[in-house]
Picture 1 (cartoon, one colour):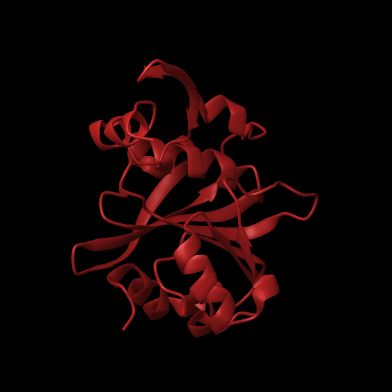
Picture 2: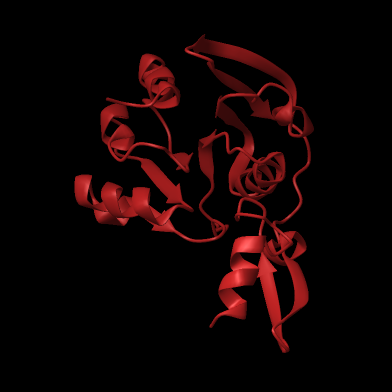
Length: 190
């Protein structure tokens, strides 16, 4: 069974029938197939869903990376599954907006997705909602800067058990920008 966010997309599948679409961090391996548009590219940042998705559908349709590389060929629309971290959502929006045509459709699906699109769209509309989940969308009308992943990286040097480690993380990574107690104990015992 599909997640509530994917169910909302399937209920609005007619929105994705035409054009070239980018689906970002879906929580279900089969949602791309279920939407039925062969021009959907799926960008994953979570390896488990990426692996499942490649087995379920055309492997070439799926991309796994920290950020989606902007190319000359821009998308007509994109849907981002709302992550838990607002900083992660902001990073994804900056990344994905740089991959869209001017006037393209930009959507967020998930919990707490209501005001995130205002930085990119003059008008944001609630398209559907159910089961504590909502689908918001708007037209990309505001200027978009080229995306630079390095601007989102946090690099920190830590000392553990007399050794120095340099760590780098991105929004969305567990305990972004710091080392949690469990990791510190693991490093002390290595």
